[in-house]
Image (cartoon, rainbow, N blue to C red; front, side, top):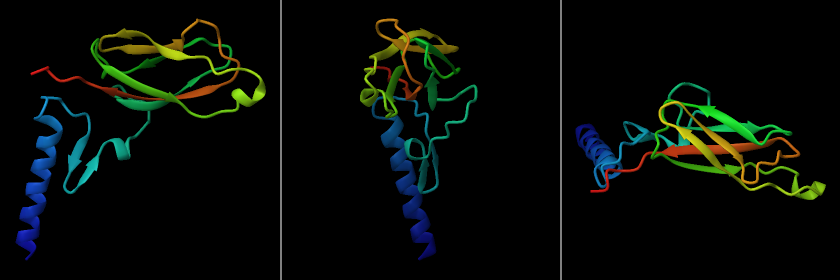
Length: 135
């Protein structure tokens, strides 16, 4: 019985790895461990050189913030959102934010679209995805 369960867990793990990486030839940034997946559900946001997700503070009085990571490439897809804060209720609007620059293998920059500094500290949550080969 134990061998059967181990066999089924192995097959399930191989299937999950194949489903993540083989369909579009995407190199997954997540790591598979036994029956558990360490990835989007379990992302460490500590700062390190190969970070692919995190939280960054766009400080009040600033229009841009730089995030250093070797995991970004010129064709990376960067998904981000703002963590809720009290900007709307305080009479100042939340400024539209975008990815301003990407330096291949070095860093990328978030900033307000109009270049005007924000009035309050705003936390940006971001994640990098690498596109497939387009096969």
